[in-house]
Amino acid sequence: MTVLTPFYRGRFAPTPSGPLHLGSLFTALASWLAARQAGGEWWLRIDDLDRPRCVAGAEDIILRQLEAHGLHWDGALVRQSQHEADYAAALQQLDAQGHLYACTCTRATLALSSLTGPDGPVYAGSCRAAQRDRNAAHALRFQAPQGTVHWDDGIQGQISRALPQEAGDFVLRRADGQIGYHLACALDEQRMGITEVVRGADLLGATVQQLQVLCALQLPPPRYAHVPVLLAPDGRKLSKQNGAAALASDRGSVSRQLLFCLSALGLPPPAELTGAGPQEILQWAVARWDRQQLTAQRTLPALP
Image (tube, rainbow, N blue to C red; front, top):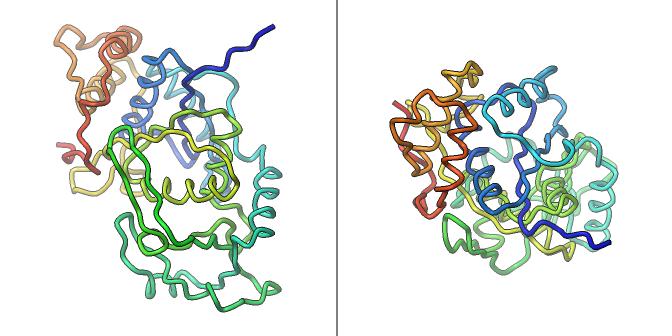
């Protein structure tokens, strides 16, 4: 029997820290449309390694919100917490290969010493050559090599970052023992067979770091496409931390939320879709989806 591997497999990976908001739906919809138009699969992963951030009952709310908006996923639900042994083994491999070093910097130290890069703060390298005592509490940082990371982004175009000047060394295991997001995420894409990652442009820096991890582990990277980020009325990123309202799940709200996100994605729907159900709206959108209608920018204008 011949098993055919889907030529496209995308994913959406929320952290169960609370209900989804309009910014979450915007990114999920872009990823879902890309997968469906390609005739591929769209997988759902719950990023639940950061247990203090996980809110009881939030995962179930997220699943029901996606279903209410017609964003049904393929395959079994994946949880990062089920694969901690894999992350630990990869961390040990990277450490044995000399890619990691101990870091004892506090958050206060980082706030004072970090440099400014194109994607946010850049670690100043304070512990890189210090040979910190590994018997004391410490994080493990990945040492960015000399050179350049670059890729052809599916929306943002050619992206290039000089290492370590523009990206810096980054944490792969926190001082409390928790595996870092970048290691877990990079390994997840490989294990799940993800061929393209569609996510927000605020994660361009994460892509730079994850590409370094994949290169060090000699694993092929997926393709990446970073959609602009929705802004709140005050100009900040639309997020739970900034008080973004949870998605409503009644029929009228679902229709309005989907139509708004489609317009923001460069696909303004016709008037006859006003009040339509999610299946009709999504069927219309899949037939017309074109990521090239999204401009290569970090953010979209703030919500009214």
